[in-house]
Image (cartoon, rainbow, N blue to C red):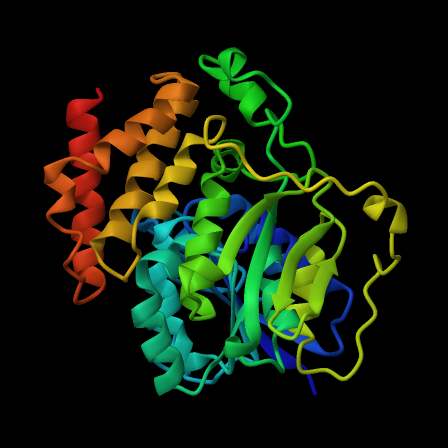
Amino acid sequence: MTKDIYLLGSTGSIGETTLKILKKDKNNFKVKLLTTYSNVNKLYKQAIQFKVKNVVIFNKEKYLKNYKKFKLKKINVFSSIDEVFKTNNKKSYITINAISGIDGLEPTLNIIKYSHNLAIANKESIICGWNFLKKELFKNNTRFIPIDSEHFSIWSLIKKEKIQTINKIYLTASGGPFLNTKISKTKNINPKYALMHPNWKMGKKISIDSATMMNKIFEVIEAIKIFELNPKQIEILIHPKSYLHAIINFNNGLTKLLAHDTNMSVPIANAIYANYKTYNHSKNKFKYEMLNGLNFIKPDIKKYPLLELLNYKFNNTYLEIILVSLNDALVKKYLDYKISYLSLQTTMLKLLKKPYFTKYYSTKPRNINDIKIMVDRVNIYVNKHLS
């Protein structure tokens, strides 16, 4: 009997990778829902190829414009998650959230009740709305699986362990494209070079975040929330080959390491097959040569000034929402050639200390609407003061 899969953000890189995995196993899985914000043409092709009868286009204008196109193929098209389940409330075996950015939070919250398992690759949802997600997961008895490579690695390594037995968790970072570049050479570097990640093929936004180390800072915040860690229990180490994804040192003197190729299909597939007794991935060869001459490096705060952000206390307040929103806005300005690479980082640190924002750091959002209001407020501020 096939198991139903709901895929949020099917047209992005994580979504496409997920569909490639599912294409190879149509006997066990059936894709029942696909979503996109605006990449309608790709969504249409995916729906046809996988014979999916329900799709969501979150962009209202594109939804209205393309409604008839899908209907002609007898595909039900909706503009929100809630609309999908008005007449059908069947739970999926697993829902995968591959939506990028904070826009992924609301649809995720809305679909938890229709999911036995929830796999998330969306950093912003966890960072900004973990309290809300955790509440819904518990309420609906939905199992949570992180599928970012680092968090999936931690999850895999500590499944049968108690958090109290962990001494330290090390998240590995590649160091980005400028690891061996002098700081003076990167101050005004062209965005096209910042996008050249040495190991991973990723979208523009996450590639810039990897260069500045913001991506790893987000992952630290995620890990603290997901695994209920003390911030002192987690540390970043640069591992240029990106073959090791997590290292866990236990109080009993043992240390576990998890390695896999720089390919997101590994954690995604293992998340999908997490309830299966056996699973054979096509990329299952151990590359021992990748571990020869390992050179772990402690990241230099002079090269990665955003590491200063780890001094903040992240307690599910507006701080996390402001941090994510500021980074989104500043990365966009950098990619649009409106600010320099150095300014992207220094401006972030300066803005976070502005009284306009700091007054919210002790207050928690009450609902998803509060989060939306703060995101808008940050964008208005940045556009006004950094036009």
